[in-house]
Length: 210
Image 1 (cartoon, rainbow, N blue to C red):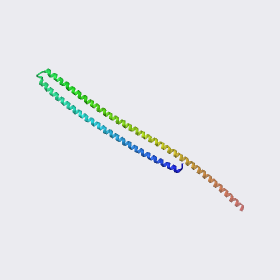
Image 2: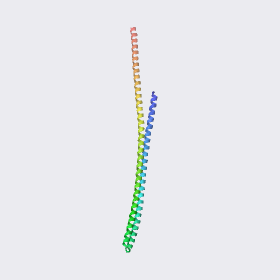
Image 3: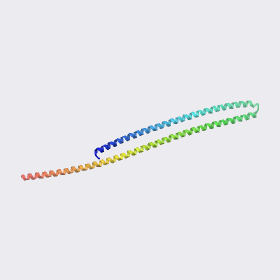
Image 4: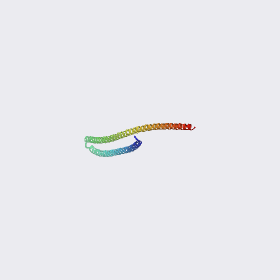
């Protein structure tokens, strides 16, 4: 592998790491936006459920007030009739009063049972909606964690490849340095031998001239 290939490999790795960082940043932003939207949706749904429950309770109270007012009016009329009929027959008045009270109790029992059933149904629907939203939120969290785990594994693999590449480059540089040092040592030895030879030849010529 040449130096240019290594430089190209480093440049590619840097670009991939930069893209991965950008992707992780975008994923975090999307995850934060999804969580914010989920919370807003939950708040809106809870507020709507509370408003519906409040409206239902208000309507039921109005219905109960109307029913009680009607019952009171009927009781007042029954009492007036009872008083008017007291001079005629106490026994008949007692029977009619008993029947009126029985009808009133039955009407109140039916009304209260209906209100309780409607309240139970509304609470069950609210609980089901909250449970569904919690499950959806948990599913979104699991998908996000899986995505982050995959990205982390990919980064780890790239980082390991980068470490191996750096080790390979270091080993190659060490071998090149060793070869260069060997060449320098050889060149120095050859130069010293040449200098010695030339010095010996010069010494012999000087000796001959003397």
